[in-house]
Image 1: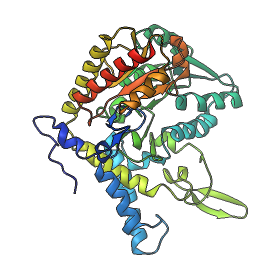
Image 2 (image 1 turned 90 degrees about the vertical axis):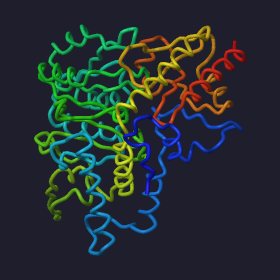
Image 3 (image 1 turned 90 degrees about the horizontal axis):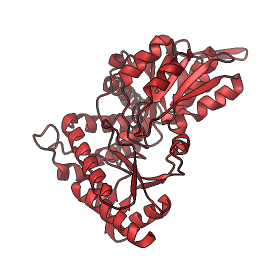
Length: 415
């Protein structure tokens, strides 16, 4: 059983949390690992790793189609995960939860099922300059195929969306408005409920990329009134290769299948096929069973945390890191909005971001260096990439200190 002594405590017990993550016990280049790349993927608590091992050791079976006890058990656990995810994002029904490989596949499914069926030539899709490529490329592929138009809402110098530009482009009457709840590069947190209302007023269907948001605070699709929402399990302490597309039932029911094969059918004959009900019509083939079950374990882990104290802890680390880096000469930080997630993108002037990242790695500090799959945003700032440090529940003040010392070392070596 998982040690839950840290849940709902008066104080945020960082050592009790860190003890759940075995990866933090190892050394990198002779140094204790300082993992500051959670925006790329979070580390996995032991309870998630153990759940995957238990499935493969004792429960390994296919779902929905077996006539034996193991299959019944796997199917029950698989569908329990769907209910858990429904509750986690406050969907109206578990039928509105479609299992995918991750945020990227969820957005591709949306583009090539819903949008392909409902948009026509010259229709407009509205995105923002801060989007991950996963929320750009599928729309561009579809736009080329169907001769659609795409507009991007500008990002201000401080990392906020330009509200005037947003309102002006909503006046163009987009059919779809798809945006991130939290920028994976800048950390900017967008007001999902406000943007959704503006999108609906303009007549758009609204999709939210919640990949960076779900591990930070409560997700409530009904309160926000979003039409679609997507996220990946590996961003919230779950396994890679598993994700979610949430969609309002009335929209999902009108969408054709994304892929064909087993499980997504009702009946197949030599002359044609009828399709299964939602959500199964979108889940062709043997699914990522252990992914669903392990995601259920990850959400159980996350739900035991005090979200307010979690948020306070991560914001404290972000503030300390921001202040620490700002004391270093020639540091440029990108995205200084007040409301941001625990993500810090920066460059050391005169040094290449990859070189800084490599020196940090030599000191045991794991960060991301590059364009973070946000090249339009890099172009907006006139840069090719940044160093990105991202914090999570298992990071400590000592980790922030290691980051700042590592950047100082990079400065001494490179400049």
